[in-house]
Length: 425
Image 1 (tube, one colour):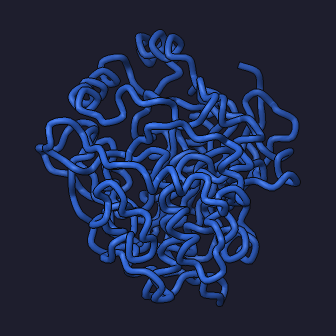
Image 2 (tube, rainbow, N blue to C red):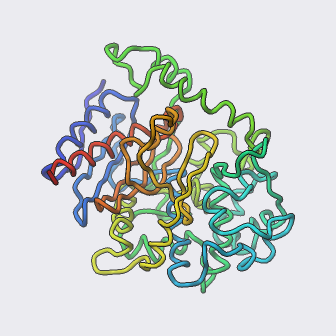
């Protein structure tokens, strides 16, 4: 492998995180990554590297973090709750009457945030242009949602189904109807969070920031399969071997068979592959659940603010009531691929598992107990730990979709927890 430089710093007590980061960058199938961690109000890990030596990749580069953006939309909704403008227990139609068409009139805000809305997929593909802020305000997407009916997984055994892209579109429509000035989530994030906090985190990029975006790329399935056949001593560049991967994938087969998403059209018109998200025309639109462009520094700083109860450097970004409500009432339910615990505010709580938990459930939780938040397709992580006051951000450009619950990033969370526990003892 060509030599490259690990850039950045770690504070005393977190040296093992840097050693792990360097080991993984040199042994796994990585291209460019950023890792940033706050402990309390101090940035204790700030690392980045480019294996391909992309000349302008830096700690301030922006990368699509896919579903890690779901926690940003959850923060936006919590801001409304904190100001008494919306309630998680209320029906969506209390704020958006037209939403109730085709049997959706009883759906609550909390059900939407917990992925229980029955709207995991739309029957039509959305034009990327319709997701520009000005077109969202013309109700280009809203009227599609209003006319849509609900569809739950086949068999009727569960309501929770991962709303990979659609939750953000629906939440954005609800948010702008309740926000006193009619802002979208992208506008709120920029004006109330990103700019004053100094965090490079965006939903709907401006033209001035497009040059900072680094493209994401999927690791080829063939490459991943061939690498997974190798034993570790032959320098396998994947975290897991083929048997470990298959053990987790088998758990998905029943969920895939029952999924309401089967046979649905692509979410965007013209979308044929993940590389579609690299198109500037897509990056400038607002898809909060799958198209936030961020740096790990920016995510970690917002996460640190959340871990501190919504306050940072003497400024309150999220009302105490809204922050508490967002984390309240985590409910356990089967999402198809695993039992998940989503709060009424739409963030997952990761906690200890039992001996009866599946491999995927253990992989999802073990090593990140106590964190709230979520993760993005192929690797990114945006999570916080209120008890230990940890803010965590991890952003890769190389996407490993067979790492179902982002365990390569979880390794850093586990190491950080170990460092902090060692300091406390």
